[in-house]
Amino acid sequence: MSASPTAAGPAAPAGKSGLVVAVLALCGIVVSLMQTLVVPLIPDLPRLLDTSASDASWVITSTLLAAAVCNPVSGRLGDLYGKRRVMLVSLGLMAVGSVVCALSDGLVPVVAGRVLQGCAIGVIPLGISIMRDELPPERLGSAMALMSATLGVGGAIGLPLAAFIAEHASWHALFWMSAAISVLDLLLVAFVVPESPLRAPGRFDVPGAIGLTAGLLCLLLAISKGGDWGWGSGLTLGLFAAAVVILLAWGFMELRVRDPLVDLRTTARRQVLLTNLASIVVGFAMFGMSLVLPTLLQSPRASGYGLELSLFQAGLCLAPGGLVMMLLSPLSARVSRLWGPKIALMLGALVIAAGYAATLGLMSSAWEVVLASSIIAAGVGLAYSAMPALIMTAVPPSETAAANGLNALMRSIGTSTASAVISVVLAHMTVSLGVFTLPSLRGLQVAIIIAACVAALGVLIVNFIPGRAVGTAGGALPGDVAARTGTRGA
Image (cartoon, rainbow, N blue to C red; front, side, top):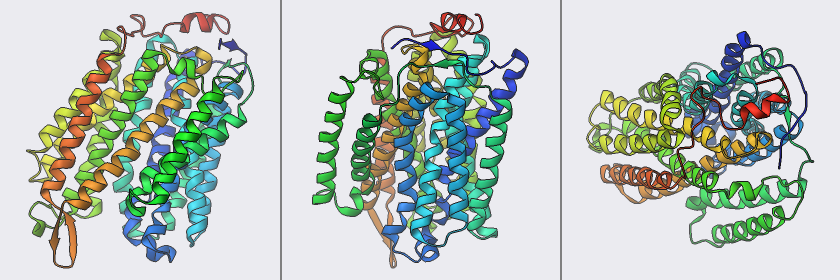
């Protein structure tokens, strides 16, 4: 599919580009923060919503499912109808969802609100695509690295912030806060971010969106709820089987429609395919520390390994990792510019594996956990910053939002798979402490080793990505200058 540039709004002046990057990065932080917003409430959700623990878990699961589905859909809508326009709609949905949760005390409306919040995750790939369309070449690499880092930054700062608010105010205050910052983001985007002049030709593939949604829901439901339902249960196996059938039929259909939701021929290109596979692996490796390290920090000392910190204290220990990702974003861009995003992605996977290996010897005090998590976060930052560059050097400018959305979906599949696999390990390797059952030290170590091995697998996958995959010395991606010539000059 070729680009069909259409003047949809004024381009960002050179002096305004820094403000545009700052606003888009803030949006990314806020959207990713929504993923950890309710983590401090998990133990109390059954009481707060007057429901069972199993049903209360839908407050978390629903957001993850909505985010996974909306990433590729919102990306394609952005390519067709305007990335800024779809970003505004996404932020509006997040604000509405926050208000719904803030006004609710029952499970169903809170889950509905969390679904709307999850729909906003597409803001991050949309923001990266706007940067490609709007920023001068010399700023593009560092801006994309910063935007990619927001996915980790928001999650890292969200946990202690949400824990502090939950401890000192009503749980509804969490959602009033998220509503307020959602509206702030919406206004900033409306007044600061210009509409991208690039549009893809064609129309939105509604049947393709329905098919992808159905297939992903079956797959991710089976992955995320299989531990509760039983991995050998008829429901879990049936969902896996349905996912295979639906996604195969969807792929067959997408190859035959004129304007597919996802251009599978582009996706099958070696560079795009391997980058997406690496994204699954890095997503898995990243999420491992989100499950293991909080358990280590919060478990009682009587367990033999726990540091017995409060949720707020544990969140503070993990927050530096997010700051490391943000501070390293210029370094990530420089590595990509000098040696190519392939090397940056490979180096990131190596650092993640090394961080997990170091964690095995850094488990006896809080400062050691801070150091270990910061090493892992540094690797995640390097890897995440390289992925958009690898994707966008291999797809037409008119498909960047959809391609980045699909790449974000691959990361979501990786994190969901990590949650399932590591939860099984921790649930089966336990130690009894009075009436409580906790994961054993051996279980935590096995989970860490699994995450390290998965990161090492990522290094192997990245090795097969073709070529150096690097832009010009100034940081422009291949095809950018030509694409911009028809809209506002190189």
